[in-house]
Amino acid sequence: MLTPLLHRKRKIAQALEESEGAITSAGEALERTKRIYGIRLLVRGLLWISIYALSRGLLELAIVEQWLRVVIALLPVPFFAWWLWTWMKGVSEMDELERRIELEALAVAFPLAVIFLMTLGLLDVAIALNPGDFSPRHLWAMMPLLYYVGLYRAKRRYQ
Amino acid sequence: MKNRLKVLRAERDWSQAALAEQLGVSRQTINAIETEKYDPSLPLALKIGRLFGQCVEKIFVDTDGK
Image (tube, helix red, strand yellow):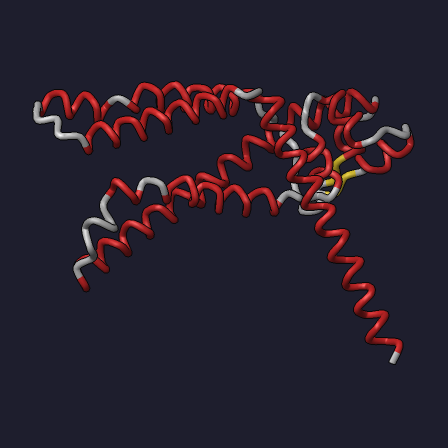
């Protein structure tokens, strides 16, 4: 009678300890991001996404000049480059383990992106996917998610 | 690779954060070294050795070495 109760209590204590650890590491991750980047990465990332949204909106309008449409489509690229430069600069300021975690995250994200796109390609051949749902205009947003999968895995490994 | 970092740190009553600050790395790095999930680079190992006034071989033990 008492043993299952004790077992349950121990499990609850263990779960609480684990969640405390997760909160601490999330707090540390936030602290690390703040230490390395300040708010630069966030601001420049938001700027890039805003310009992307603006470009998407403008391209929906009835602009007929081809050159102007291309210019609008390329508009987010310099902002992305600015954000990327900020990120790369931050990576160079990380310590050796943090850099290894970044590398391992990308080492997972890249093959995942390859298999993801390859599978979609094969599915497209197999059942002709709706190009509206599976065009690059939506798929690119999946790539950061794959990076976060890699980052989560790499961080857990060294916790 | 086994190491005595935790023992040496405890002898001096330093927290992981304090040691991390002295070595210029994150607390997570110290924790990963102490739990033997991560082997430090040679420059960091030498820095640790200098900080504790001991040679690297006395702090880090290569368990693969015969």
